[in-house]
Amino acid sequence: MVFTKNDIQNADRIYRLNLINSVTGIKPGNLIGTKDSDGNENLAIFSSVIHLGSTPALLGFITRPSQKVPRHTLQNIKETGVYTINHIPIHNIEDAHKTSAKFDKGVSEFDVCNFTPEYIEGFNAPYVKESHLKIGLRFKEEIPIPLNGTSLIIGEIENIQISEDCIDINGYIDLEKSKSAGISGLNTYYSFNKLTSFPYARVENFINSNTI
Image 1 (tube, rainbow, N blue to C red):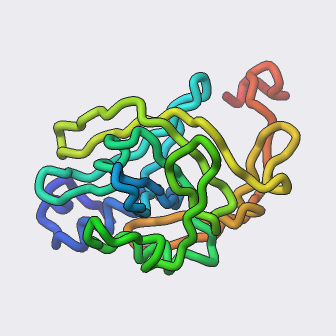
Image 2: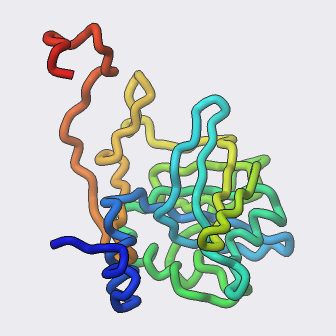
């Protein structure tokens, strides 16, 4: 089966959404926790978190167009300058999915979706207590994407909370042990099973360099 550009553009809207959202494969599933300047907490699911660099430690995520629909996560990040990214535990995927509903600004998804907010001293954004891997970030930059009205939000990592048994002596995080969930498309969730690990690939380490 081959989909041309015209096929994609002329497809049923829901079919097109499902196709393009799942074509990239399994993406990380995260809950972004924020709080506005009045202290109202917000929690929203995102599958667009990406690594941007290690020095400084930067992560990015994509926000949808905000011209017509208010984006409480982005509004809160701009108001307070801080937010959290929390891996979705596989045993909380249904509750995590519910946070995608369009709740009014005064409604806390922590409350209605059965998550527990928690804080660490000196950082004014709520973490998800149920998550096994939690990241605190400070807002650095918003890069608009004119092609579709979305924006890339860039934050610098200020802290990471993770169970000791989920990270090895070299700093590698085991997503199977952390019981983190992945997302394909808009509403399909996956667990992770570790297959194997390989050393850093260097040309001189290959037995037969003619194979590359």
